[in-house]
Length: 80
Image (cartoon, rainbow, N blue to C red):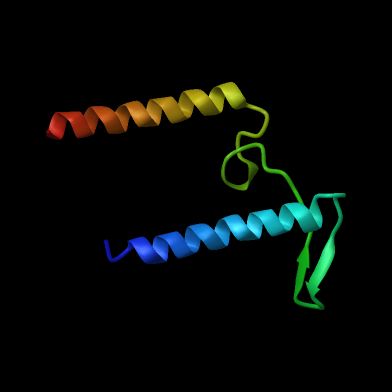
């Protein structure tokens, strides 16, 4: 319960920043310099996993995720 408030605050900040980015950077797509010389924002879309790995390999990605989940489920179930 003590982690609920920080969790909700991070979740709210994450969703608010995504809504802001969609409204500001994606419609129409454009770059902007948020802090001159320090922070430049450019919209990109990641269709893979971390850092674009397995981009364009949706079937492989789904199979890998399902295999990992199956291993976690099997080891968790065995420990019960």
